[in-house]
Amino acid sequence: MQAKSCGMDTSGNKIRKLEFLLAEALEHKADCIVTCGGIQSNHCRATAAVSRMLGLDSYLLLRTNKPDEDPGLVGNVLFDRMLDANLIQMSRQEYGKYGSEAMIKRTCDRLKQEGRHPYAIPVGGSNGLGTWGYIQAIDEINSQLKDYDLPVTDIAFACGSGGTAAGIGLRSYLYAKAHPNSALNFDAKIPAHAYIVCDNDEYFHGYIDNKILPAMGAPSDISSRQFLQITNAQGTGYARSTKQELEYIYNVSRTTGVLMDPVYSGKALFHLIRELNDAPEKFVGKTILFVHTGGQFGMYDKVDALQEVIRQDQVNHFEME
Image 1 (tube, helix red, strand yellow):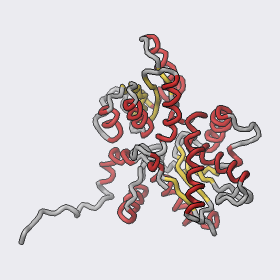
Image 2: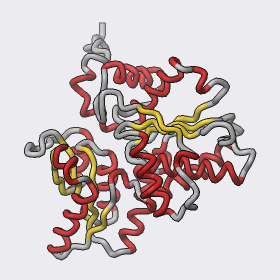
Image 3: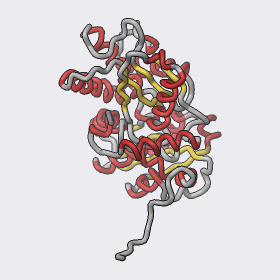
Image 4: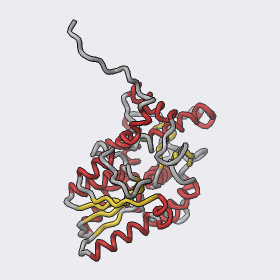
């Protein structure tokens, strides 16, 4: 399943969250949006696109190794700039020192002093409101599984900020409790698998349990540990790709026609397949639905590394004779 099927083909899972978040922004009479992410953030680019469609300015706080240098016109940054987004760069050290929440708030405060009416969106759009986008998505998935009689037993996906994971896991769990014959069954094992590409399992369980679920009004006795199985898929680090991972992403595209990304879904699928090979007993007898959450523009940031991966003999000069 590709999350891009919800519209705005290049925005993946982000647009599902933004549908709810931007509706509230308009309700609050906001005239600009402030959010945060990495320099090649899919979420920030999607936010800039939707904001521009709605006539709102966007302010993107972008984490980078080179905050004092122009980011150029590569990948998502190219589209950020084409959408006339305001780019505010910070170093990884500054991000670690202050945190995204404080930096977004400070930016909003400055805009208010200028007479603007900003609306703040957290990293990845992952808060209680944005997560409803994936509550809705699971209802669509369950409907499709029933309509096409698909024998799916497990669902797997990349996790970078927690909202998609919380929505998929929580709704799958609640749906299974209300429908004993549902495809995803939580009686024996947790069938919702989040492959995290940053931080660690404790961070995500804590963020979902203490931030997202309370904001959604979820029952206090429900914990993410009841509906999410978390596996580390960071590899060498967030947004860093090994040659083996890029080779796998390339092989998927050239054999299936499905374009992956190097930061989220591509890395998550790579580690899922590796897990299937290394520990087949975990999924024995299972049929896995993998949710592709978009982000293909991030491949532009890997051009140099891809030179050693992609075939170089596919270009020829035309000859009539």
